[in-house]
Image 1 (tube, one colour):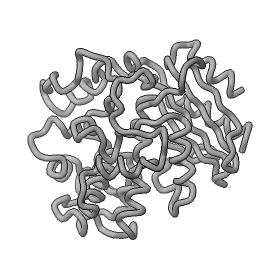
Image 2 (spheres, rainbow, N blue to C red):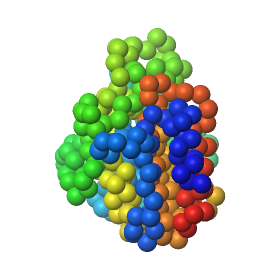
Image 3 (cartoon, rainbow, N blue to C red):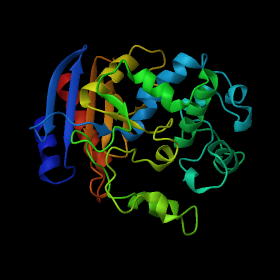
Amino acid sequence: MLHRILREIVEKSLAPAVDCLVSRDGEIVFRERFPCDGQPLLFDTASLTKPLVTFPLVRNRLGELNTPINEILPEAGISATLGELLGHKAGLKPWLPIYLFEENYLSTIRQRGLEPAGKSKKAVYSCLGYILLSRAVARVVGNPYGEIVRDFLKDYPGCEVNPGPRPDVAPTEHGNQYELKLAAEFVADPDRSLFRLDRDIHGETHDLNAFHDGGISGNAGLFATAKGAMKLLQALLHMEDVFLPLMEGPGYRYHLGFTGTGIAVSEDCRTVAVFLSNRVHPEVGPGDFSAVRHDVFCAVMEMFA
């Protein structure tokens, strides 16, 4: 069943490249990738950066998750703890094109990123909270976030930041056409020169908030092979609060990335899956690709959990 789902993704041109890896009790039990020839590709994992990189750095560098973010970043002006930011319960809007505003990232989130006063802090998925968390890590460590991430990834072969347009790196969209449409809802006549409209995005972070933040931020910027992402995921399983940055699915916890990526963990943490693709190349197509990834995860859990 899993073989069929993966093959149909490519045959129906839902994504030009796919790599799927499954482990059970730490041992690889399934691997399939398309195209099959050549070396495994490095994919822009997009929002998988949140659970696989930012969460471990926050857990290891910032201490107790009940610490208010304002104790680390007083200028953030956000009444939320680290745990609330990690769990998307900080009362922040889902997204803003921060790079289009004159203020710096912290000021823009403080001034424009809060939901209306009085709105309950229910879980609302937000990239902004993880950008704040990366600023907090940088403040405590005393180094730029990109430098911290690169040092962290030294222990994880197959994981990089800004690899460049190498043959082993899967390209994403031809320009940030999709994000340009989203940005126009926030800023009238956005500066088109910031959207790389004249070229394929290849070896550069697809997410523009991360791209204009040096290529890596708390919300996006990790490039990984399936094996590299699996090593990060296996490390995540040994951490406290492993499910905090993950979403709840039908019998598993998961996280998705806009570029066509995803990870899934069974409720007992014994079965884990990494699914990588570049479904946005050369453009963001129609259809619900989230549903496709959940089909993959459900098949994984049925076969191996």
